[in-house]
Amino acid sequence: MPVVVLVHGSEYDSALDSYPLQRQFPAAGIGAFVYDKRGTGASTGRYTQDYLTLANDAIAAMREAKRLAGRRAGRVGYQGGSQGGWVAPLAARIEPVDFVVVSFGLAISPLQEDRSAIALDVTRHGYGADVMVKAMQIADAAAVILNSNFQDGYDQLDALRKRYGTEPWFHDIHGDVTWLLLEKSPEELRVEGPKLFAAVPLHYDPMPVLRNLTVPQLWILGEDDVDAPSAETARRLRVLNAAGHRISVAVFPRAEHGIYEYETAASGERLSTRQSDGYFNMMRDFILGRPLEPHYGAATLTRAAAP
Image (tube, rainbow, N blue to C red; front, side, top):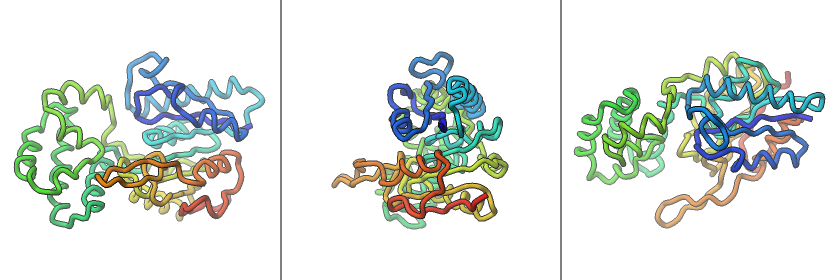
């Protein structure tokens, strides 16, 4: 029986309480091991977003899952969502497993994630190159604050807010983290920021790990993901695929973070409707060691060559 360890994202909620895959996988004949990351739910320790620490925690979870499964365990691997897309491959590089599944994760750095999200805000609202130049100034100012661990750089962002705050595009800028910097006061952010983004490695480059990871990987992305924009990640992964790496890449159209399809309300707000057809079945087949089918729902699938 294959066993999958579920690697968490950046949420503060208990995985034991909220992860549906811990029930869905066993119903498909796959053992699942779920744990509360440090500082959440029933887990002790201080909450952190340091990827090496979290990777070592995932390795400890894998060892415990294998101990509990004993001789029942067949193929073993990780499924990581969102931030888990940085953590699971790193854990597999440190201590090899049989497979890695990444759902709505990224092959760019956290700082690039925020910048990419701001760029996507500009293009999806129909603004042109002139607005993109201004929005990237916002991204640069946000990066100064983030690089200072929320302690410095607020004057630069405030000056841009005064310069552009009345322009129609300004309130469409969200980013992944920048929205928080625009919403809260420097006094609040100096206290709350270091706790919310505890030890995030802003410049972490996942590509060296991915280039040197030999286990089969399946990456599943949402084409319209505004939290973790997927275009550059998909491009990088397909380059690795073309170079012979054992990486399969699936992109679901009209799906955002969580591989959720959505409707758009009159206000412009997205309303999630369901997870894309084929999403779970693709993970199931991959974990069970079956060859991936040519089509899963409407996903564009780039399959790894057979070893």
